[in-house]
Length: 305
Image (cartoon, rainbow, N blue to C red; front, side, top):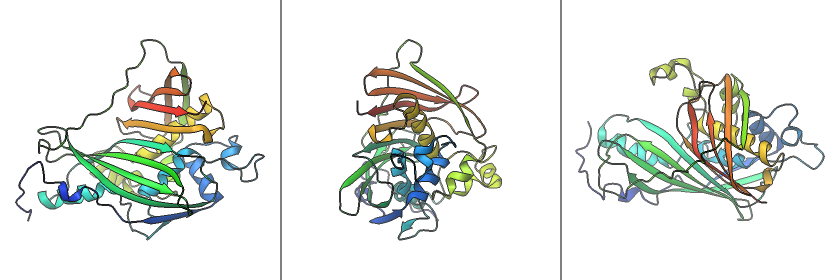
């Protein structure tokens, strides 16, 4: 039976600052290559997939996202992917007495320097805040993960935003989604690339083993026509496209990537990247599927000049 819940602006206060505990993900060149393949790298992308490549193996910046929803290479091991947003989700489920709708809304990744091709990610995460979308519109969990190497040097910081359908209008701080004004002119970059129909299956091997991305029955139970792409895989897919379009095979130059997840993406179709250059080193972008539906929006891609 659900607990009787008093809805107030302080109802989530005990969750702020809570996290899943310190964790560690050790990796080597095979993990780096598998990740690159899992976000669409092809046989000619040798800097990402060949460990003996002249100049060394290069690591895509979004590789740093793996610890967030990883339940394969992480210590301590968990049986299912569990990130700090689930602390908020579990709290809401306990109060309601049933599972509410949850969606990954946006990811914001800052890279502090080139990622090594082997080593370890040491992570600390937490719930930063629970933001109010308004009456009947749910709440947003603002979560953060800080990633360090074994020596304690910062490698990356990610902010992840997750929608939960209950308790909108509870009176907490308001959620304000950043919006990018897109220029009223054709895109400076327009690239179409096929997303293989087995990409979600391949990406699972990097550690995000949520069944909804492979099990047709579970996908149907959640109201989807078939298993769909992991949001972070699509995010990595478009980041690789942006690098290749603007700074080919120079992932070490990437400083910041932000994108909002606007719709479920199904593999096995052409994906179109549209990007506009605001200034040298800064692009804003969208990713659309073969039907023209917006998959990732309000994107920002920043790199060293």
